[in-house]
Image (tube, rainbow over all chains, first blue to last red):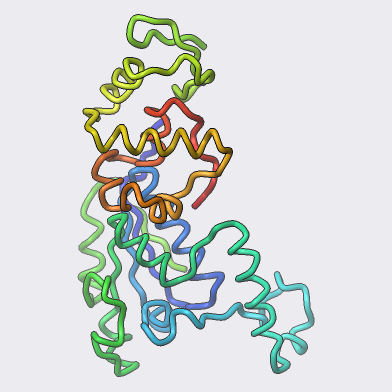
Length: 157
Length: 102
């Protein structure tokens, strides 16, 4: 059975652990199936490609009904850190790489990694603040032009 | 089901993966590789041996494992087995397709 999906374009707009991993697992999974993939990091999604921040992403414990804890408890000091620690431990058991290593794997696998120009300007970031494996800084128009073939899908996370 | 590979009847599953590793040999391997448009080189054999070794030790295969393997890096791995490297290389190595999402 061969898929009709030829290229996956992801827009990552949030850098909670659960969102970043969703994008990374899908982008890597695409490459593993012989499908092209690219990720466009915008707004808070940029934290996942900032050298100083990428290893310090957190799980969202507030406003996340999937956590099954009362929202007010999720906001207490230390709860987010504890939940993050627990989730990272579970991910390590499944041999899921940390964010930095995952980005290396994606880049080596041929997944293109782009930063959003507007968001980079807004957060006053410089190229040296971002990972070395970054393929460039694009406008949204540039990113749309990456959808250059039949069977391209675009996904907002 | 049976499939004719290298003029022999080989047991495979519906995706073409060998069911019985005992039926695998270099000749069968080269035929499957040919179907995947892969021409086996020294490096390909090295990777195939690494994958089979992992499989026989019942260690799960993943792209992260390839990165740490010391046999090949990820870029080379994609270049050697284009169009889904772990899927193709396990097919060629005569071992089951990895079930992991990573």
